[in-house]
Length: 215
Image (cartoon, rainbow, N blue to C red; front, side, top):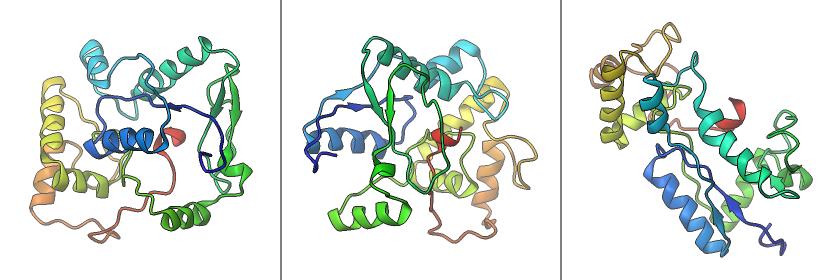
């Protein structure tokens, strides 16, 4: 959009539990494009966990709504006439009413016919680096490979997750989701024992759909 000369601002609704590389990426993008970075006021995920005294999970899916969607909706309500540009690709399933009738929705990637192949080609052509993960560090919906990589790359974040599970007597992962331990402490022990994730190699990190959109 910047290359086409379009005028726009960037809107980011942080949860407070982004991985460090995500926050750096957002700030660097705003600087490189010389665009305003709008961060609507909203609660952090840690604040809501403390308030509710419970952890988000598949059974308690309030995090995306309260930390991401509602602050965005509030901003749009106070800025009538806005157009919200959403990054759904041309090869992703149709979505309707992203945030209600508070703004016009626009899908630039679909306008350009950009599917995954075209997006990756554009990134390669312009040397655009995007973090492997853009969701929360302790997201209940992440894959086993993501949990394992979190333990390897950000052990301090993992320790925070273990402490939260111990404090509230609950787990981020849902029971019976797979054959691996549900609790982070037991999951860490399994990883440290050398147990392998079936069907995943050491560099398996492919993610082709936005988790927030799927939630």
